[in-house]
Amino acid sequence: MSRDLIVRTAVELIDQYGTTQLSMRNLGQQLGVEAMSLYRYVRGREDLLEAIVAGMLHDVETSLEEGITEHWQGYLQTLAHRMRDIALEHPQAFPLVATRHPATPWLRPPLRSLELVESFIGTLCGYGFTDEQIAETYRAFSSFLLGQLLLESAVRGAETSPVEEPLDEGGATVPNADENVDLSEKPNITRMQSLLSEDRGLDEFETSLENLLDRLDLMLSQ
Image (cartoon, rainbow, N blue to C red):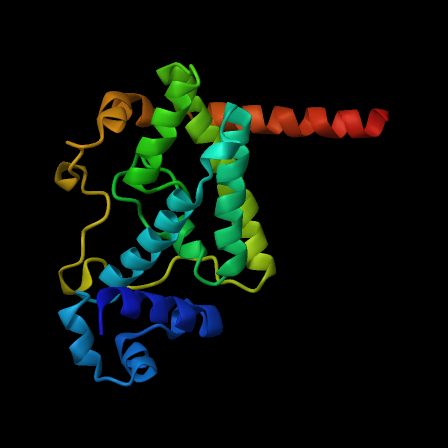
């Protein structure tokens, strides 16, 4: 028994039955142990759900291929496809990435991992992006992934509404607790925290709408 085994088994259970059927009791039965024995490795269902999300995003980060990142377009294409792979492999579990509260309100799902965002900022900075350009790219790219991949998950039968569970069950980490997030080893995020915190929702909406109308206009003119 280990935390990793418990998380992997929980993902398998969600893949088969959906998030509504994930409970410590059902998970214990799947593993052939009493539910209470799981609390040696996870602090409760909330902690388990956070571990599932962290695991999926860690898989995305470690699977990025350096050979495809000679240009920034290649990096974003690779990252987008890695995120889509997760959504297609685990359509029932992927909405957790999109609907659960991130560690801080300025992290945007589905790119809601501090490690992944730190890498994202550093990579684009290496391509010559300014901080303002990186922040705008992060917002636009996240919005694209969120809408597209949630739709694909829903088409495959996933429940895309948030899991209705009391927060901080069993001492799990409290979401949106900025003061408790350690950024000491995240220099890129620390530098850009104020830019990432800006509310540009209306600008993003208008830009996306204009791009859609331009695309439709081009289609109709052909």
